Length: 474
Image (cartoon, rainbow, N blue to C red; front, side, top):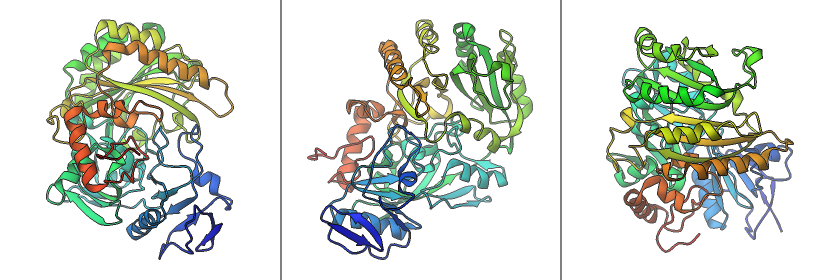
Protein backbone atom coordinates (compact mmCIF):
# COMPACT_ATOMS: atom_id res chain seq x y z
CA UNK A 1 0.00 0.00 0.00
CA UNK A 2 0.98 3.62 -0.31
CA UNK A 3 0.93 5.84 2.76
CA UNK A 4 0.61 9.58 2.15
CA UNK A 5 3.00 11.48 4.40
CA UNK A 6 2.18 15.18 4.36
CA UNK A 7 1.41 14.97 0.67
CA UNK A 8 4.34 12.71 -0.15
CA UNK A 9 3.64 9.26 -1.57
CA UNK A 10 5.67 6.70 0.37
CA UNK A 11 5.83 3.06 -0.65
CA UNK A 12 5.39 1.86 2.93
CA UNK A 13 6.48 -1.29 4.65
CA UNK A 14 3.09 -1.46 6.40
CA UNK A 15 3.62 1.85 8.14
CA UNK A 16 -0.08 2.61 7.96
CA UNK A 17 0.36 6.28 8.88
CA UNK A 18 -0.78 9.49 7.27
CA UNK A 19 1.90 11.91 8.41
CA UNK A 20 5.12 12.41 10.33
CA UNK A 21 3.93 14.43 13.27
CA UNK A 22 4.72 18.12 13.02
CA UNK A 23 7.75 17.69 10.77
CA UNK A 24 8.54 21.11 9.27
CA UNK A 25 11.29 20.21 6.86
CA UNK A 26 10.93 18.57 3.48
CA UNK A 27 10.00 14.93 2.91
CA UNK A 28 11.35 13.48 -0.31
CA UNK A 29 10.33 10.14 -1.78
CA UNK A 30 10.91 8.24 -5.03
CA UNK A 31 8.01 9.89 -6.88
CA UNK A 32 9.61 13.33 -6.66
CA UNK A 33 11.77 14.77 -9.43
CA UNK A 34 14.82 15.45 -7.26
CA UNK A 35 14.79 12.12 -5.40
CA UNK A 36 17.84 10.78 -7.27
CA UNK A 37 19.93 13.90 -6.71
CA UNK A 38 18.87 14.07 -3.08
CA UNK A 39 19.78 10.46 -2.31
CA UNK A 40 23.18 10.79 -4.01
CA UNK A 41 26.21 11.03 -1.74
CA UNK A 42 29.82 12.07 -2.36
CA UNK A 43 30.92 8.56 -3.40
CA UNK A 44 29.24 7.93 -6.74
CA UNK A 45 29.80 4.18 -6.37
CA UNK A 46 27.06 4.15 -3.72
CA UNK A 47 23.57 3.62 -5.15
CA UNK A 48 20.95 3.12 -2.43
CA UNK A 49 17.23 3.84 -2.51
CA UNK A 50 15.66 4.90 0.77
CA UNK A 51 11.89 4.95 1.18
CA UNK A 52 12.05 8.48 2.47
CA UNK A 53 14.52 11.31 2.92
CA UNK A 54 13.57 13.55 5.84
CA UNK A 55 15.39 16.84 5.25
CA UNK A 56 15.31 18.41 8.68
CA UNK A 57 15.38 22.14 9.39
CA UNK A 58 15.92 21.89 13.14
CA UNK A 59 16.40 19.62 16.12
CA UNK A 60 12.65 19.08 16.54
CA UNK A 61 12.51 17.63 13.02
CA UNK A 62 15.32 15.21 13.88
CA UNK A 63 13.47 14.04 16.98
CA UNK A 64 10.27 13.61 14.98
CA UNK A 65 12.00 11.67 12.20
CA UNK A 66 13.79 9.30 14.60
CA UNK A 67 10.61 8.61 16.56
CA UNK A 68 8.70 7.99 13.34
CA UNK A 69 11.32 5.56 12.08
CA UNK A 70 11.38 3.70 15.39
CA UNK A 71 7.62 3.53 15.54
CA UNK A 72 7.39 2.00 12.08
CA UNK A 73 10.42 -0.28 12.12
CA UNK A 74 12.31 1.61 9.41
CA UNK A 75 16.05 1.47 8.93
CA UNK A 76 17.76 4.77 9.79
CA UNK A 77 20.72 6.40 8.07
CA UNK A 78 22.09 9.76 9.19
CA UNK A 79 23.30 12.29 6.66
CA UNK A 80 25.47 15.23 7.61
CA UNK A 81 27.81 16.08 4.74
CA UNK A 82 27.38 12.68 3.02
CA UNK A 83 31.14 12.56 2.42
CA UNK A 84 32.02 9.19 3.96
CA UNK A 85 33.59 6.80 1.45
CA UNK A 86 31.52 3.89 2.76
CA UNK A 87 28.30 5.72 1.88
CA UNK A 88 26.76 5.19 5.32
CA UNK A 89 24.69 8.38 4.97
CA UNK A 90 22.08 6.58 2.87
CA UNK A 91 20.31 3.23 3.24
CA UNK A 92 18.03 1.02 1.19
CA UNK A 93 14.32 0.94 2.05
CA UNK A 94 14.52 2.98 5.26
CA UNK A 95 14.59 6.65 6.18
CA UNK A 96 17.49 9.08 5.78
CA UNK A 97 17.57 11.64 8.57
CA UNK A 98 19.08 14.39 6.45
CA UNK A 99 20.70 17.34 8.25
CA UNK A 100 22.09 18.99 5.11
CA UNK A 101 19.80 22.02 5.53
CA UNK A 102 21.13 22.59 9.07
CA UNK A 103 24.38 24.43 8.35
CA UNK A 104 24.36 27.29 10.82
CA UNK A 105 27.60 28.42 12.51
CA UNK A 106 27.83 30.90 15.40
CA UNK A 107 31.15 32.21 16.71
CA UNK A 108 32.04 33.77 20.06
CA UNK A 109 35.42 35.38 19.29
CA UNK A 110 36.01 36.55 22.87
CA UNK A 111 35.74 33.09 24.42
CA UNK A 112 36.95 31.38 21.25
CA UNK A 113 33.99 29.09 20.80
CA UNK A 114 31.95 28.02 17.78
CA UNK A 115 28.52 26.38 17.73
CA UNK A 116 27.97 24.37 14.56
CA UNK A 117 24.84 22.58 13.34
CA UNK A 118 25.08 18.94 12.38
CA UNK A 119 24.71 19.43 8.62
CA UNK A 120 27.44 22.03 8.24
CA UNK A 121 30.48 21.56 6.03
CA UNK A 122 33.99 22.57 7.05
CA UNK A 123 33.89 25.40 4.54
CA UNK A 124 30.98 26.86 6.51
CA UNK A 125 32.99 26.72 9.73
CA UNK A 126 36.16 28.18 8.23
CA UNK A 127 34.20 31.00 6.59
CA UNK A 128 32.77 32.16 9.91
CA UNK A 129 35.72 31.50 12.21
CA UNK A 130 38.32 33.02 9.90
CA UNK A 131 36.44 36.32 10.01
CA UNK A 132 37.91 36.51 13.52
CA UNK A 133 41.29 34.93 12.72
CA UNK A 134 40.23 31.70 14.45
CA UNK A 135 39.98 28.04 13.45
CA UNK A 136 39.84 24.52 14.76
CA UNK A 137 41.17 21.33 13.19
CA UNK A 138 38.88 20.47 10.31
CA UNK A 139 40.02 18.12 7.56
CA UNK A 140 41.73 19.03 4.28
CA UNK A 141 38.68 19.38 1.99
CA UNK A 142 36.13 22.13 2.58
CA UNK A 143 33.08 20.15 1.42
CA UNK A 144 33.66 17.44 4.05
CA UNK A 145 30.87 17.29 6.62
CA UNK A 146 31.59 18.49 10.14
CA UNK A 147 29.62 15.71 11.84
CA UNK A 148 31.22 12.67 10.24
CA UNK A 149 34.75 13.97 10.41
CA UNK A 150 34.37 15.05 14.04
CA UNK A 151 32.72 11.91 15.36
CA UNK A 152 35.43 9.71 13.83
CA UNK A 153 38.26 11.78 15.29
CA UNK A 154 39.11 14.55 12.84
CA UNK A 155 42.53 14.68 11.16
CA UNK A 156 43.62 17.83 9.39
CA UNK A 157 46.34 20.41 8.83
CA UNK A 158 46.14 21.81 12.36
CA UNK A 159 46.10 18.57 14.35
CA UNK A 160 49.77 18.48 15.31
CA UNK A 161 49.49 21.95 16.84
CA UNK A 162 45.94 22.01 18.15
CA UNK A 163 44.94 18.36 18.37
CA UNK A 164 42.33 16.34 16.54
CA UNK A 165 38.86 17.77 16.00
CA UNK A 166 37.59 15.66 18.91
CA UNK A 167 40.27 17.15 21.15
CA UNK A 168 38.60 20.52 20.53
CA UNK A 169 35.03 19.33 21.07
CA UNK A 170 33.52 20.98 24.17
CA UNK A 171 29.97 19.65 23.99
CA UNK A 172 27.39 18.14 21.65
CA UNK A 173 23.60 17.99 21.46
CA UNK A 174 22.39 14.54 20.43
CA UNK A 175 19.09 12.85 19.63
CA UNK A 176 19.14 9.31 21.01
CA UNK A 177 17.59 6.14 19.62
CA UNK A 178 14.56 6.82 21.84
CA UNK A 179 14.10 10.25 20.30
CA UNK A 180 15.31 12.09 23.38
CA UNK A 181 17.55 15.16 23.24
CA UNK A 182 20.67 15.01 25.41
CA UNK A 183 23.62 17.31 25.90
CA UNK A 184 26.95 15.55 26.24
CA UNK A 185 30.00 17.22 27.79
CA UNK A 186 32.54 16.61 30.53
CA UNK A 187 29.80 17.45 33.05
CA UNK A 188 26.70 16.02 31.37
CA UNK A 189 26.58 12.38 30.30
CA UNK A 190 30.39 12.18 30.36
CA UNK A 191 30.36 8.53 29.24
CA UNK A 192 28.50 9.53 26.08
CA UNK A 193 30.78 12.54 25.56
CA UNK A 194 33.80 10.26 25.77
CA UNK A 195 32.31 7.90 23.17
CA UNK A 196 31.36 10.68 20.75
CA UNK A 197 35.01 11.73 20.54
CA UNK A 198 36.00 9.03 18.05
CA UNK A 199 33.20 6.46 18.22
CA UNK A 200 31.45 7.62 15.07
CA UNK A 201 27.71 7.88 14.54
CA UNK A 202 26.91 4.89 16.73
CA UNK A 203 25.19 6.72 19.56
CA UNK A 204 22.66 9.07 18.03
CA UNK A 205 22.15 12.04 15.73
CA UNK A 206 24.31 15.00 16.72
CA UNK A 207 22.41 18.17 15.88
CA UNK A 208 24.94 20.66 17.25
CA UNK A 209 28.63 20.78 18.16
CA UNK A 210 30.49 23.24 20.38
CA UNK A 211 34.16 23.64 19.46
CA UNK A 212 37.17 25.30 21.03
CA UNK A 213 38.89 27.71 18.60
CA UNK A 214 42.49 28.85 18.20
CA UNK A 215 44.26 31.79 16.64
CA UNK A 216 45.09 30.71 13.08
CA UNK A 217 45.78 32.98 10.12
CA UNK A 218 43.88 34.41 8.46
CA UNK A 219 47.12 34.21 6.43
CA UNK A 220 49.32 31.13 6.75
CA UNK A 221 52.37 29.74 5.00
CA UNK A 222 51.05 26.78 3.05
CA UNK A 223 51.12 24.95 -0.25
CA UNK A 224 52.44 21.88 -2.09
CA UNK A 225 55.91 20.96 -3.36
CA UNK A 226 56.09 18.54 -6.31
CA UNK A 227 58.85 16.08 -7.26
CA UNK A 228 59.06 13.62 -10.13
CA UNK A 229 57.81 10.15 -9.18
CA UNK A 230 61.18 8.64 -10.03
CA UNK A 231 62.63 10.38 -7.00
CA UNK A 232 59.85 9.31 -4.61
CA UNK A 233 61.99 6.92 -2.56
CA UNK A 234 64.75 9.46 -1.97
CA UNK A 235 62.32 12.30 -1.26
CA UNK A 236 60.32 10.15 1.15
CA UNK A 237 63.44 9.21 3.09
CA UNK A 238 64.43 12.86 3.35
CA UNK A 239 60.85 13.76 4.35
CA UNK A 240 60.88 11.11 7.08
CA UNK A 241 63.99 12.58 8.66
CA UNK A 242 62.78 16.14 8.10
CA UNK A 243 59.44 15.73 9.91
CA UNK A 244 60.76 13.54 12.72
CA UNK A 245 61.71 16.57 14.81
CA UNK A 246 59.49 19.13 13.10
CA UNK A 247 57.67 21.60 15.35
CA UNK A 248 54.01 21.03 16.05
CA UNK A 249 53.15 24.03 13.88
CA UNK A 250 54.02 22.08 10.73
CA UNK A 251 51.25 19.93 9.31
CA UNK A 252 52.03 17.85 6.23
CA UNK A 253 50.21 15.48 3.92
CA UNK A 254 52.11 13.47 1.29
CA UNK A 255 50.33 12.60 -1.95
CA UNK A 256 51.48 10.06 -4.54
CA UNK A 257 49.79 10.09 -7.93
CA UNK A 258 49.55 12.39 -10.91
CA UNK A 259 49.66 16.18 -10.80
CA UNK A 260 46.02 17.29 -10.98
CA UNK A 261 45.06 19.82 -13.67
CA UNK A 262 44.65 22.72 -11.26
CA UNK A 263 45.02 26.31 -12.52
CA UNK A 264 48.06 26.86 -10.26
CA UNK A 265 49.92 23.90 -11.82
CA UNK A 266 51.53 24.50 -15.24
CA UNK A 267 49.82 22.58 -18.01
CA UNK A 268 52.99 20.69 -18.95
CA UNK A 269 52.87 19.00 -15.51
CA UNK A 270 49.22 17.97 -15.69
CA UNK A 271 48.79 14.20 -15.13
CA UNK A 272 52.53 13.66 -14.71
CA UNK A 273 53.34 11.10 -11.96
CA UNK A 274 54.59 13.08 -8.97
CA UNK A 275 55.12 12.94 -5.26
CA UNK A 276 53.63 15.96 -3.51
CA UNK A 277 54.26 17.19 0.03
CA UNK A 278 51.53 19.58 1.07
CA UNK A 279 52.22 21.71 4.10
CA UNK A 280 50.52 24.22 6.36
CA UNK A 281 52.46 26.09 9.04
CA UNK A 282 50.30 27.15 11.98
CA UNK A 283 52.71 29.82 13.17
CA UNK A 284 54.43 32.92 11.87
CA UNK A 285 55.21 33.19 8.16
CA UNK A 286 58.86 33.92 8.93
CA UNK A 287 59.29 30.87 11.17
CA UNK A 288 57.58 28.69 8.59
CA UNK A 289 59.79 29.86 5.76
CA UNK A 290 62.91 29.11 7.79
CA UNK A 291 61.62 25.72 8.86
CA UNK A 292 60.57 24.59 5.36
CA UNK A 293 63.72 25.79 3.58
CA UNK A 294 65.56 22.41 3.61
CA UNK A 295 62.56 20.53 2.25
CA UNK A 296 61.99 23.08 -0.51
CA UNK A 297 65.64 22.81 -1.58
CA UNK A 298 65.87 19.01 -1.71
CA UNK A 299 66.50 17.48 -5.15
CA UNK A 300 65.24 20.54 -7.07
CA UNK A 301 61.45 20.14 -7.02
CA UNK A 302 59.44 20.32 -10.22
CA UNK A 303 57.23 22.96 -8.64
CA UNK A 304 57.12 24.83 -5.34
CA UNK A 305 53.80 26.49 -4.53
CA UNK A 306 54.48 27.20 -0.85
CA UNK A 307 53.61 30.77 0.02
CA UNK A 308 51.54 33.05 2.19
CA UNK A 309 47.83 32.57 1.51
CA UNK A 310 44.47 32.76 3.31
CA UNK A 311 43.90 29.67 5.45
CA UNK A 312 40.32 29.30 4.22
CA UNK A 313 41.49 29.37 0.59
CA UNK A 314 44.10 26.71 1.28
CA UNK A 315 41.47 24.55 3.00
CA UNK A 316 39.50 24.39 -0.25
CA UNK A 317 42.47 23.95 -2.60
CA UNK A 318 41.90 20.20 -3.03
CA UNK A 319 38.13 20.34 -3.45
CA UNK A 320 38.19 19.89 -7.23
CA UNK A 321 40.37 16.76 -6.97
CA UNK A 322 37.77 14.83 -4.94
CA UNK A 323 34.57 15.68 -6.77
CA UNK A 324 31.06 14.71 -5.67
CA UNK A 325 29.75 11.88 -7.83
CA UNK A 326 33.06 10.31 -8.80
CA UNK A 327 33.59 6.69 -7.74
CA UNK A 328 35.87 5.96 -4.79
CA UNK A 329 37.28 2.82 -3.18
CA UNK A 330 39.68 3.07 -0.23
CA UNK A 331 41.95 0.87 1.85
CA UNK A 332 43.78 2.39 4.78
CA UNK A 333 45.99 1.77 7.79
CA UNK A 334 48.10 3.52 10.39
CA UNK A 335 51.88 3.16 10.21
CA UNK A 336 54.21 3.14 13.22
CA UNK A 337 57.25 4.62 11.44
CA UNK A 338 58.60 5.13 7.93
CA UNK A 339 61.32 2.49 7.86
CA UNK A 340 63.45 2.10 4.73
CA UNK A 341 61.79 -1.19 3.77
CA UNK A 342 58.34 0.38 4.20
CA UNK A 343 59.38 3.31 2.00
CA UNK A 344 60.41 0.80 -0.67
CA UNK A 345 56.95 -0.76 -0.56
CA UNK A 346 55.20 2.60 -0.82
CA UNK A 347 57.38 3.87 -3.67
CA UNK A 348 57.04 0.53 -5.46
CA UNK A 349 53.23 0.47 -5.46
CA UNK A 350 52.05 4.06 -5.30
CA UNK A 351 52.32 4.83 -9.01
CA UNK A 352 50.92 1.61 -10.50
CA UNK A 353 47.24 2.56 -10.60
CA UNK A 354 45.33 2.72 -13.89
CA UNK A 355 43.22 5.82 -13.33
CA UNK A 356 45.10 9.13 -13.36
CA UNK A 357 42.76 10.26 -10.58
CA UNK A 358 43.74 7.51 -8.14
CA UNK A 359 46.23 8.48 -5.49
CA UNK A 360 47.79 7.67 -2.12
CA UNK A 361 47.57 10.15 0.77
CA UNK A 362 49.70 9.95 3.90
CA UNK A 363 49.03 12.15 6.94
CA UNK A 364 51.74 12.98 9.49
CA UNK A 365 50.34 12.52 13.01
CA UNK A 366 52.33 12.82 16.27
CA UNK A 367 52.62 16.26 17.90
CA UNK A 368 49.53 17.18 19.92
CA UNK A 369 47.75 14.06 18.62
CA UNK A 370 50.13 11.75 20.47
CA UNK A 371 50.22 13.78 23.68
CA UNK A 372 46.64 12.87 24.56
CA UNK A 373 46.67 9.65 26.54
CA UNK A 374 45.32 6.48 24.93
CA UNK A 375 41.77 6.02 26.14
CA UNK A 376 41.24 9.64 27.16
CA UNK A 377 38.95 9.87 24.15
CA UNK A 378 37.55 7.11 21.95
CA UNK A 379 40.05 7.85 19.17
CA UNK A 380 42.52 4.98 18.97
CA UNK A 381 46.14 4.53 17.89
CA UNK A 382 47.36 7.95 18.99
CA UNK A 383 51.01 6.90 18.89
CA UNK A 384 50.98 6.09 15.17
CA UNK A 385 53.40 8.02 13.01
CA UNK A 386 51.29 8.32 9.87
CA UNK A 387 47.89 7.39 8.51
CA UNK A 388 47.95 6.22 4.90
CA UNK A 389 44.97 5.81 2.62
CA UNK A 390 45.06 4.11 -0.80
CA UNK A 391 42.38 5.74 -2.90
CA UNK A 392 41.06 4.33 -6.15
CA UNK A 393 39.21 7.08 -8.01
CA UNK A 394 37.43 6.91 -11.35
CA UNK A 395 34.66 8.84 -13.02
CA UNK A 396 31.32 7.25 -13.96
CA UNK A 397 31.71 5.46 -17.28
CA UNK A 398 35.46 4.95 -16.99
CA UNK A 399 36.56 1.31 -17.16
CA UNK A 400 39.42 1.39 -14.62
CA UNK A 401 37.37 0.84 -11.47
CA UNK A 402 37.97 -2.90 -11.15
CA UNK A 403 41.66 -2.56 -11.92
CA UNK A 404 42.23 0.21 -9.40
CA UNK A 405 40.17 -1.48 -6.73
CA UNK A 406 42.46 -4.48 -7.20
CA UNK A 407 45.46 -2.11 -7.03
CA UNK A 408 44.40 -0.82 -3.62
CA UNK A 409 43.97 -4.37 -2.34
CA UNK A 410 47.38 -5.48 -3.61
CA UNK A 411 49.02 -2.40 -2.14
CA UNK A 412 47.25 -2.93 1.17
CA UNK A 413 48.38 -6.55 1.29
CA UNK A 414 51.95 -5.47 0.56
CA UNK A 415 51.88 -3.18 3.59
CA UNK A 416 51.38 -6.37 5.60
CA UNK A 417 53.31 -6.33 8.89
CA UNK A 418 53.75 -2.54 8.71
CA UNK A 419 50.05 -2.04 9.42
CA UNK A 420 49.19 -0.84 12.91
CA UNK A 421 45.57 0.16 13.50
CA UNK A 422 43.40 2.33 11.26
CA UNK A 423 41.52 5.62 11.29
CA UNK A 424 37.84 4.73 11.43
CA UNK A 425 36.82 7.49 9.00
CA UNK A 426 39.03 5.91 6.33
CA UNK A 427 37.33 2.51 6.47
CA UNK A 428 35.35 1.51 3.40
CA UNK A 429 32.03 -0.25 3.10
CA UNK A 430 33.34 -3.80 2.60
CA UNK A 431 35.69 -4.04 5.58
CA UNK A 432 35.97 -7.03 7.87
CA UNK A 433 34.08 -6.15 11.10
CA UNK A 434 37.29 -6.85 13.03
CA UNK A 435 38.78 -3.73 11.47
CA UNK A 436 36.40 -1.59 13.53
CA UNK A 437 37.90 -3.08 16.68
CA UNK A 438 41.33 -2.52 15.13
CA UNK A 439 40.52 1.18 14.80
CA UNK A 440 40.20 1.50 18.57
CA UNK A 441 42.14 -1.27 20.25
CA UNK A 442 40.54 -3.78 22.59
CA UNK A 443 40.16 -1.69 25.74
CA UNK A 444 38.64 1.34 23.98
CA UNK A 445 36.40 -0.84 21.82
CA UNK A 446 35.06 -2.75 24.83
CA UNK A 447 34.30 0.52 26.58
CA UNK A 448 32.50 1.76 23.47
CA UNK A 449 30.38 -1.40 23.53
CA UNK A 450 29.32 -0.51 27.08
CA UNK A 451 28.28 3.00 26.07
CA UNK A 452 26.49 1.69 22.98
CA UNK A 453 24.59 -0.79 25.11
CA UNK A 454 23.51 2.01 27.44
CA UNK A 455 22.33 4.49 24.79
CA UNK A 456 21.41 2.29 21.81
CA UNK A 457 20.83 -1.27 23.07
CA UNK A 458 18.81 -2.22 19.96
CA UNK A 459 21.54 -1.01 17.57
CA UNK A 460 19.15 1.38 15.85
CA UNK A 461 22.11 3.36 14.56
CA UNK A 462 24.05 0.70 12.68
CA UNK A 463 24.55 2.31 9.26
CA UNK A 464 28.10 3.22 10.23
CA UNK A 465 31.33 1.49 11.17
CA UNK A 466 29.29 -0.37 13.69
CA UNK A 467 29.97 -0.98 17.35
CA UNK A 468 27.53 -3.69 18.32
CA UNK A 469 25.87 -3.57 21.73
CA UNK A 470 25.79 -6.76 23.74
CA UNK A 471 23.16 -9.32 22.75
CA UNK A 472 22.46 -7.63 19.42
CA UNK A 473 23.46 -9.20 16.08
CA UNK A 474 22.19 -6.56 13.60
